[in-house]
Image (cartoon, rainbow, N blue to C red; front, top):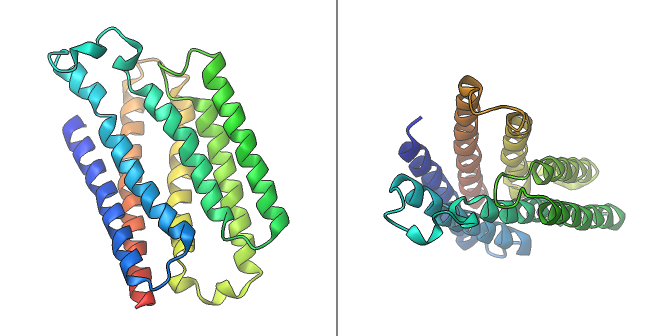
Length: 233
């Protein structure tokens, strides 16, 4: 896959989702606090992804640019995304739990988030993963945490009147895009950790799946914002 095409399209759909989020907030008379946070999260995601391009710029220019990172741990952008991965899953779990009215369930998710952050951070600190690879511990535990949060969120919907108003309920739409993305990509990501660089066919397959899943999730986010903004209007 053409790396420039992959990066360009991925950044474009992320930017589109963030802009659509701003459009939704303007249309909504009194947007929920956590929906505001989610839009800011999308902008942060775009910024982090864009910032992470520094590693590709250095590598593909043979370090004619950014020569200061050559032969340093920062030549790879794993450190940046390992930090962001922890924040990513913690935020998403907190976002969906914020719409759960049951205080006990909210506390359960809060403690799971704290436990997740501690374990994932400890793994980065006490292993050599931080500067070398994406942490599979952060991804696996984060995905489990996120799925639990979404399932409890659905349980809350089933027990409330929200079930009758799902057409304009933004968190429900976002949970679909988010859930499908991680259900599709997490198993493949974990499997890649057991492969060598010679396993070209599977690695290319994973790259295509990740590319398509990225497009699907962010376009689904953008569409969700547009649909819900029309309902709000």
